[in-house]
Amino acid sequence: MSISLFQFNILLSLFFYSISLHFSNLSLSIFFQNMKFTIYFFYIFFRYDFFATNFWVLLSRVLHGFFVQR
Image 1: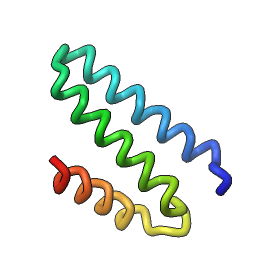
Image 2: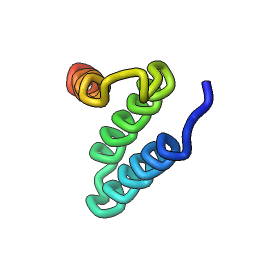
Image 3: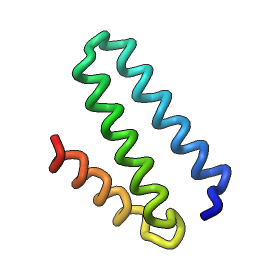
Image 4: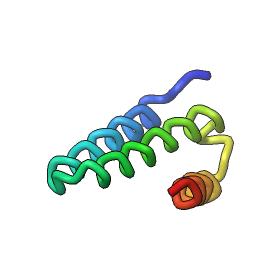
């Protein structure tokens, strides 16, 4: 599946956002929580085509998976 530049930018910004959260809080547990969220988001992103799926459905899937796995 080809990935658009828009999708790649979102993934990249999420990844660096989770890293910046880690350094601002200096808490490993928070860092791993955010990394787990980022990795889960990566999985959802590549599992389902972003533009074929409604954005809010995609977002709810990600959030649901994140809170269920905590």
